[in-house]
Picture 1 (cartoon, protein in one colour):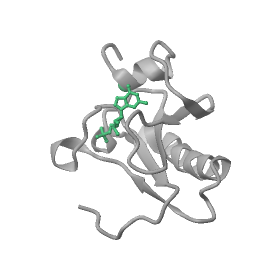
Picture 2: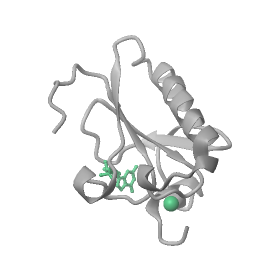
Picture 3: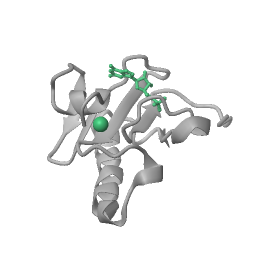
Picture 4: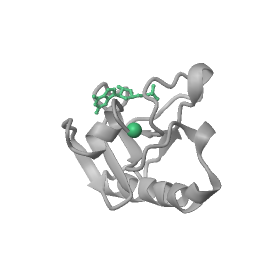
Length: 114
Ligand code: 5GP
Ligand code: ZN
């Protein structure tokens, strides 16, 4: 999608530190990390957010979650644990309008979610 930052990262027209990639997804380091490990996992296909996923995205969504597991293992945070967040829409604090999962780890996180 034109003018989408994360599509540009997926197309490699904007650089990012990629930690994992396959035919459907790409995972890269957040430019402004809030935890020692802060990775964004996105579908290569443009989807605005969880609010706009369609039934045809069912397999892709499952693939994204299995990819999170894979990335957590690659970055060696699977044993200690991690948090997965997807901000959705205005109230959810979504800034980049391309579906993404924040994978947060590398330290013990608090229990407060808001
Ligand atoms: P949101 O608030 O939309 O859930 O999160 C967007 C995330 O994208 C933020 O954590 C922000 O730091 C990250 N981000 C914004 N621009 C860039 C960029 O150009 N490169 C990378 N790697 N991350 C970005
Ligand atoms: Zn996009």
